[in-house]
Length: 442
Image (tube, rainbow, N blue to C red; front, side, top):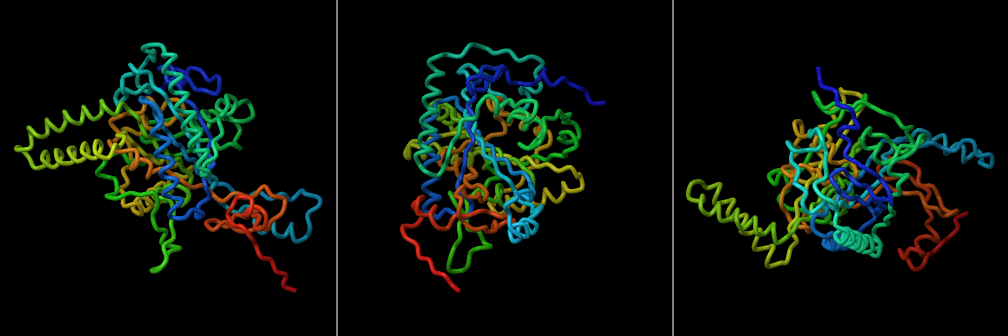
């Protein structure tokens, strides 16, 4: 029989106050909700500009910072407003036509976590999910805390000024929730949506990951051998492309809006001390140099490490560690095989290989809890540069209805969900166009 552990004994969050999450290890986390550009609306040049903005924003973060982007994709059904008294016969007929139309709802959260300088790196065998006690090693330095807040402020300003992203700081109430609405922490632990009532579920790690009646699978991109040979800010979307014209989507879109099932796409970038990282890689290169005569694999690894160091120094690249994973779930266990096929196909579009996590899934899942990013098992990360790491970030969201009182109803390209669109005044206000022509056909 599996051993039961009380939730409060392993829960890593100590306190939530001043819109910050404080862990029991002394890690401080700021959380933001991000509004991304709508899918299929960016050009090739805009994808590249957005990519460069993300690289610039990550580079201003101080050392020992974890950048965690968490994209939630939840299956929903369109719920019309049948009770409106002023609705006409045509309006009610339209609502009946779209009633219960399935679509994928998207929410994006960005967490910035600052680790204490003396914090021991976590691994799969040294996770706070396994340790019996969690005791901080030392208090936070106020000067380092201010440095982190300044870096986070610059990060937020760079993204807002770009015009691609809207960031909103998540408050204490939105993080912890209340008796009627679950907060972000509770939603992640029990895989709840914003509209669900607060609910406590059992979390099982034996014989697979299971939360309540939801059967979960975790797939990761954590090894360089599973990654694509090339990456960029965009890829071609074959369904809308022809031999002469190429239609672009974000490089990681196959793992986001184009993956039509309930899932969370977690993206981690760990900013460490660049000089220390280069020094460690230099030592690794020397060891491989000594062992190069014993095997060809050592010689190849030595050359790869040497090329990495040359690029870091000559091109002034920021070396980082990265990890990406997709958490899927369903209440029907027979659907897991179909979900695996969908993920494998999505990763194949990126020329990547699907790796299902089994033994390390509990630690990776637990590190995805907002505020616990610093306890991510570092043995499941890989070395890269900030430019390549940001290529795997999801850059797009679903179509959004306009707040304008005038407009027409159009259908979402992917699901057919009805979307209210202002094609007259809003495009001019946003600078999409400078003039417009109208005609009446009678």
